[in-house]
Image (tube, rainbow, N blue to C red; front, side):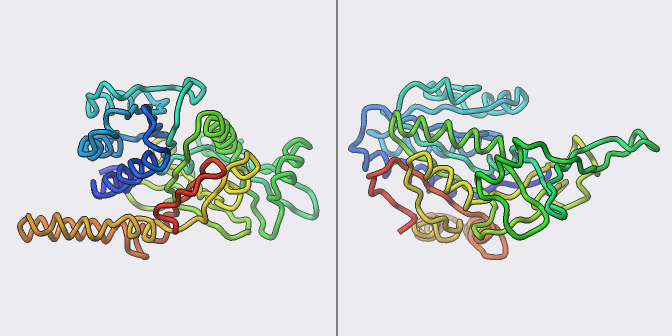
Length: 316
């Protein structure tokens, strides 16, 4: 049930791989006495729960582990708190509340949910897309284009967003998050690891989409009951993080990342100890995570770190 399903809900092997990656990153940092994992928008808490369960197998790491969950939804906080009963976990409302590190920022389908602006260019004039109620039918919602203000035009020009294509998407909220995350990484050391659907090529396109019960639909259908998202412009994200003095590994797809971390080998080990039905279920779920027609290619993985760090597990 629901509108969409995320990788941690498909298989706990996803969370297990992320936990192992975090352990390896901590080891690369020479095992500091504290390591903070901050999950951005933790959903129903499944990924956090899987990370905790796996971390307990690495006792030295677990002793040093603290977890912050950045969550603004009271409804989701309640769900998370029922699932995660762990003293190491603390809920925060703002990244500014973090005052120590090193920090591993994790974002799984976080950035796609943040608001964007859409700008059109017509005959060298820029228009911003707005939402309004129809004059003839007050229950009907529609788009209108208004001339964009100068500051908005300057911002999109500075970011190099003006290229071929009718629609320019300006992820202003995501940019704010990236800037503040980068400052925390510079100050306290650490990294940012994100999983999301998106694109790496330089082109402008309309990626705004609405999904209800796993089906795409008109953006104005079921308002308030459907999931509205947009795709990540990974080229732009990389440029912003590099401007903030971080090193960004090349963006790869989820299939390559999880395979390099050994997810298939791990599935094979588990499969030896279980019955046929459970084994079939594991590999069915694994296919959803890895197959190019499922999440394997659509979902991309991005890793940013402090300059000078040679750690690149999963991205070599």
